[in-house]
Amino acid sequence: MKEECLPQGFSWSGHHCGLKSDSNSPDYSLIVSDRDAVVAGVYTQNLICAAPVNLCRSRTPGTQARAIVTNSGNANACTGSRGIQDAQQMAADVAALLGIEAEQVLVMSTGIIGEFLPMEKLIPASAEGVGSLASGLEAFLDSANGILTTDQGRKTAGSIVETSQGIVRIAAMAKGAGMIGPNMATMLAAVTTDANLSQESAQQILKRAVDKSFNCISVEGHTSTNDTVLLLANGVANSLPLTGDDLDKVSAEVEKTLIQLAKQIPADGEGATHLIDILVQGAASKADAKQIAETIGSSNLVKTCIAGNDPNWGRIASAAGYAGVQFNVQGLKLRLNGMLLFEGGEPCPFDAEKVSKSMAESESVLIEIELDEGAEEARIWTSDLTTAYVVFNSDYHT
Image (cartoon, rainbow, N blue to C red; front, side, top):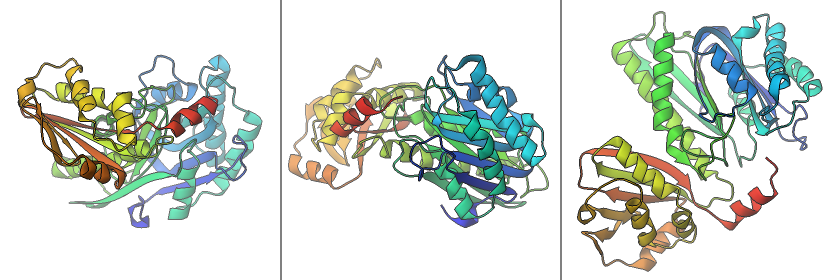
């Protein structure tokens, strides 16, 4: 993440407020726009959703957002009416300190499910968070650190877009390492931009970008209660709302930025040793291609053979076969790290040791499925499955 990607008119902060037992782990994060911003949101599809998700849903899309406050270490999920009151209080505390309306503040939470927020810690946290706001890269990174839970490191991405009205900047942060499934899952993300976007454009851009990014990752297929992706666009960079080619450019860069973030999540999967990149081409429809890719990506047998650097292509082919998509097996080609292993219904001669070595020497393993059914394709990213993942999640209290 480069400082020149930071959008104008935003400030950030992050610090430790006591929700996490480790005093060196930030657990409070704040993002503030110095003017009213258009806001869009995409959320979990789990029927059991956290109080901050309900709060954000009621405030997005909108045109007068000013801040996003996030706590980690406690999800504020399955906490009933008190949880709703606590989420509202988090927003109100920040708003009072900034001199804005409570409805202009969005709230995200992540961590333990089913425990009430210790508001006696979060109330003073708001004062410290507002008091330490700054506009530079260090403050942005502090904010990105404040949203992490089991992540091994922060996840950030940014870009710069040339438009006819001048330069637009995009900076985004995310968290997520486990309990990750299709349709997001145990992940939070905040996207900030100084682009001038209409409320409708912002929501469309975010929805499309999430479909191509966070909805294409998986670790173990467990959809969480708190998934939230928010986009704030404060319009500082452009005097008029972007349209036409300018809007398309910004939309493409938001998508690119979120894909960068999304790939960092399974790469950081708890105990993971490989990012698995699955590309399905030549399908009759995008839905068919994605269904095959997700079926392969959710197979524990596929995940474990990748973890063991074993080019056991039979597990991959059989997973494609039970995906529930009709295709001509004779027209299927299967490649692993670019090497052809299966074609025309038969195994291909290949050097197993060479393929295994290529897997062992790379943090990313590419599985390519090519069908002869059409011109549609889909891509997903997932993680391998290791003993470390099982140990971590048998010990971690969620």
